[in-house]
Length: 285
Image (tube, rainbow, N blue to C red; front, top):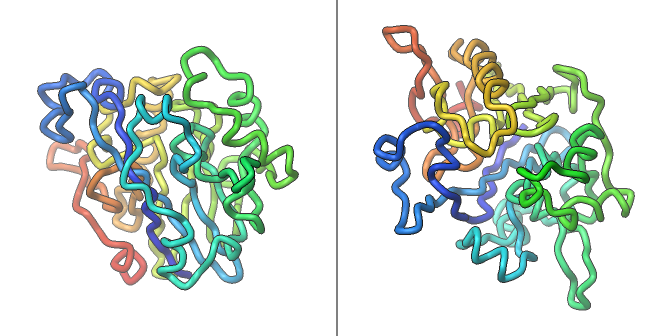
């Protein structure tokens, strides 16, 4: 098995929304806001080479959004999949599967693009794109709070093209022999979190928006974007119980500087972030 971090660019979100009930005087020390109260976040994807499978987890925001969108979220430092995959000896055509944790624009926007004639096309033409029916229905007819995050042009064409398949919602279901899936409901309906079992015996948890950065490890740090924050609280507790055994590591999709790390229990029993750990270390240990 090989793992590759794929950086797709950065964007900005309101700091208060990202940190929820945590006061600005606390969170602003972690990720300082600009004059408009916006903080910069990474859009970090993971490529898993597992046997004959080349699985990309999430796709970032993409490059097809219009100027109105860009003025709201300021996507910048965009990195093209063609060049990032070329750097590791692969092409977009080599990707066999695209695992979409959920359909918010910063996770699925890069799945599709426009060709020279303005026709929408898949970025990974030979891949199967994976979601689940419950989340698809939720995103297709969204509630008023999430409507701005679910842009139909990012995911409906994939289903119309016959390129999307749905996983059965079953806790711990196997996506591959080495990847199991957990379904969560705090952030949005049936968000999919992959648990990747590594040859070292360690497990890498791709946290998506359950724990978007290492700043969000502690329980009260829950985004205001979450539909059911108390469910998020319970889901974080479950992850804490699993991941403080010294063999689980977290992958942070939106952390500006830290891609992976572990969590530990403090002397008072509180779960806190431990230290950054590289992918190579996780695979080796």
